[in-house]
Length: 160
Image (cartoon, rainbow, N blue to C red):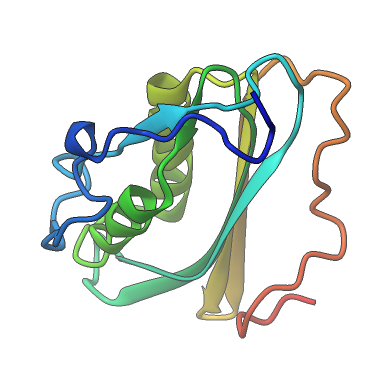
């Protein structure tokens, strides 16, 4: 098998890819699709950057904005990116504190993908003079050359 022709997921087994998908308004009900990792015996890092993540403050109902960075070293599965994007959209009307949102996303991804290692960093925009950064990780990090959070470009949220 050539590395340029990995096994393709069967679209009929996926919820979103190649199909019209409505945006779910409840993150607990949003479906995350996973696909087979074409390189399950290699240690490598994958990164998702979500620069315009939005949820709501559970106390005031005001929108909260963040840049989320999800790094993981996949084992058997990868998260399918369209389903991840739609899941992120589902948080727009979801009321929860920054820590709960960030850690909850990381835990669900860990539980569904069972990666070797995962880290999520939430860089939340400041409100009232305070910004909140939340980092959660789980698993044993292999000697894989993971992606660093140093010098990460964050988008319009006051971090440099």
